[in-house]
Length: 592
Image (cartoon, rainbow, N blue to C red; front, side, top):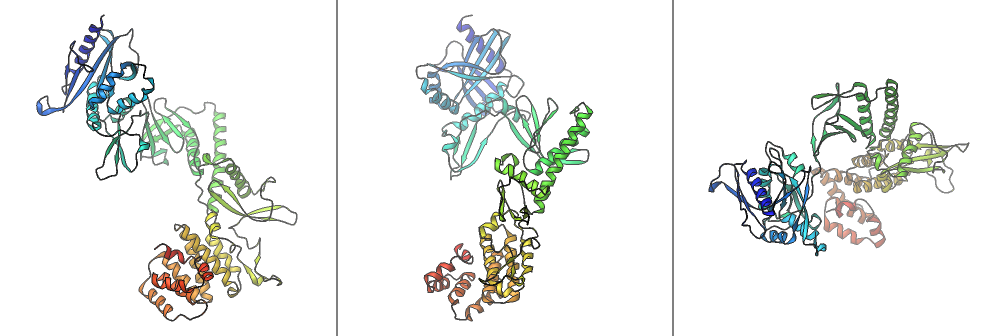
């Protein structure tokens, strides 16, 4: 068959395909062809074929070739670079149609969208191949009575040709101030997902500027579409998950439950990969055990019967026993973290090697009551165990036999250690016992994941003489405020500071304690009128002593009186200013 006959047959096949659709009309000539185009396809709006129903004109180039057999899937065809340059100049794109012909009854039509986005990618990617006059192009099959019908291809070509005409084409990395990224497809019977997975889809960035500028992005293939479904997954009456991820790919669909449980609809098999946090693993393993026992699962109200996971009953029972033990170990770990007031949500898979080792160490110490001999902690004192971003403060103590014991630093320590404040040369006595936590800085307070405000407050019960220790207690309370100012989500820290200050005020209502009370209140809410009046009375009746400027400065901050603050701050000497600026009350004015 001669070339002109092949081309004529290819055009006849295309025209025959177009005749199937009332909203397409062929305007493709035979023989008398243009420079780079063979004609065009008229697209109508689906409501008729009159002048008022015209929607778009798609320029086309038709190619044909004789083949021995039709290959499955995509194909390739080489086209001259000069054609691509002409298409790019025209600015609206061209639809390339290829017909592989075995005989007049056996053929396959393929298409390639050569829109501005495609042309830019093709021309730029072949710049280095300047000596080669042709470019290889990937074409996809057109399938009658499917989402890949010629009608759908043309309608989507028209949609994206109109959108891309005259707008910039840029890579995502070149753009700033993006508002949204969007794409749109046209398909029949709501089969949008099928169209996206099998055909060309174009995405656009909408910039967050006054004009809401649209920018076309380089084309990429959609290999899968995920959709979160808010429906229950259960075995019998027990609900394990309240949502799942439905993933659609070209040849199959899967459901992902939990962190790593994947059900394949086609094979009706479930693959298990236990991942994520302790609770993620507990839930997934319990689901796994229950599934082995019952062999059914209900997803969105539909109950599926599954094949036996293990045919041998002994092997099945052994598997259930092994995983039940793993679940119990994980629960023991989870409950111990909860007991230590630790919100442990680390992804175990993402822990570094040291953290994984420390997780095992944590289990041995706090779950199994075993202190390994090869532990890095060898000296008595306060240490920490790091597991990912979790820092657990522990107290190490050696007994008379030099045996190392390790305790939760924020546990009940009154029978384990006794901290006493004494002056140089004085003999320590029980009446000078104090809290072991007063040595903590604001950094320590925020760092330790097992920080327990209730235990810290109760540790003050050992103090017999508040007057003698008021400076230490007040200094620690200020560290709490500094910590809170660094992380104002930690209401437990602010509440602890409040309780400690109230305790101090029960022993002495000093100007310092009063101002501390007010700065705590200010961190919680605005002052009430009577509270502002108290502060004004304090300011007007303040005793003139060595701390007069400090106290006036503090009151000015609380009342948000910048002029007074600057006046009394400037009245201090440099050393006093430097010390005053370390107090947490200054954080209140620095934020204004």
